[in-house]
Image (cartoon, rainbow, N blue to C red):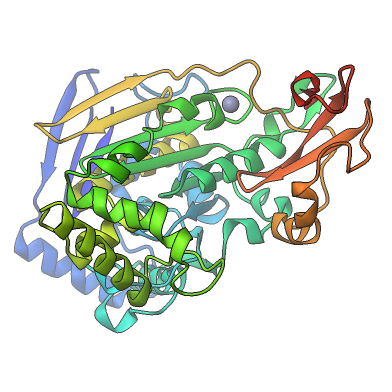
Length: 451
Ligand SMILES: [Zn+2]
C-alpha cells in the first residue's frame, strides 16, 4: 500500500526499499536547503524545477512488488501523466477540493472539474480552495483558478454545470473519472453514462472503451473509496443496497406520539406543508429559503409546545429539512487521498488498483476494511440503441399528463414498447408490454423488462 501526504515542504513516503521490505522514509528538508530550493523555483523559467517530481519518480522509474505485472518502469510514465492523461473530477466540494489539490500535486496537469453549485459561507471551514470573497461564485470556477495559480504547469478546466448537461462525447474524452459527490442519483447517472460508453464486439467487451471510475463518498466520520471498471467490476448499481437507507420516522409517531424536536419538524414537512401550501399551490420546500425554513420552524415550535418538547432551532429545522449530515474535513481528506492514489495507480500501473471497495471509519479509532464488491450478472449493460439526447426534463414536461392515464387510455397493446426515462440514468429503459387476459385488471398485466 502506498501512502503519501503533502504538508508544506514535508513529504512522507512509505514505499518498499530495494530489499523488498517496507521502509518508512521521512524527508524534513532543513532550512538552508529550503531557501536554496525556493531560489531555484523563483529563477526557473520552466515549471519543472530540479527535484520537483522526485517523489513520484521513485514510484514510476523503478519496479516494486506491488506493481502491475505489465508495469515497465520508465520516464515516459510521468510524461504521459503530465501531457496526455485527462482526468475528470466530478464535484468541487469537500472531496473535490481535496481531490484537485492531490491530483495536481501528483503531477496530473489536464484536469477538468464539473460542479453545479456556488460557494456558501458554510463551505469555508473545509473547502479550502475558497475564501470569504468567493461566496456566491461557482465552485468549479474558483477551485480551478486557485489550483492553476498555486500549482505551476497545472491546467484545471472548470465546468459550472450539471453532469446531465454533457453528453457521451464529453465523457468519452477522459482517461479516468473521479467522483466526489454527495448524491446517489448523480452517482447512478454518471455510472450509467460510463457503462453506456462501453463497446461490445460479438459479445466481447472492447477494453479500450473502458473509462475507470474512482468514487469517493463520506458521511460524517465514515467514508468509502472504490474503483469501478465499467463492464468488468461491480458498479454503483450492483451495490445499491450498500447505501444506508435514509432515516425516516414512522408516520404514526409523527402524527400521534412525537417525542423529539425532529419528529415535530418532520410532521410539518411531510403533513402540514402539502396541506397548507403556505407559499402557493405546488410550491416545494426550498431548504435554503429562510422564509420556507422559518415557516416550518414556527409550525414545528407550535407542535412542540403542545407535546412539551424542547429544542426546535432554525439550524435543526434546516438540518432536518435538508437532511444535513455534518461534514468532517479529516474524513474528506483521507477518502480523497485514497481516491487520488487510485487514480495515480490506474494511470501509471505502478501498483495494482484497489480491488475494489474500501470502507473507512474513524468514529472510534481508525478502521479500514477492503473487500471485493461482487458484480451482479443482471446489471447494466451498454444498450444496443442509444437514445437521442432529449433531456429527461423536456420529455417529462411534454408527457406529464400521460402519467395519470391507464395503459388502456393510452391505447397500448401487447407487444408494444414503453421507454422509461429517469434521473438516475442518461439512457432510457425499454419495457415490452405483455398483457394478461383483461386490460381492466391491473394485477394481471405483466410488464416485462426487455433491457
Ligand atoms: Zn453493475
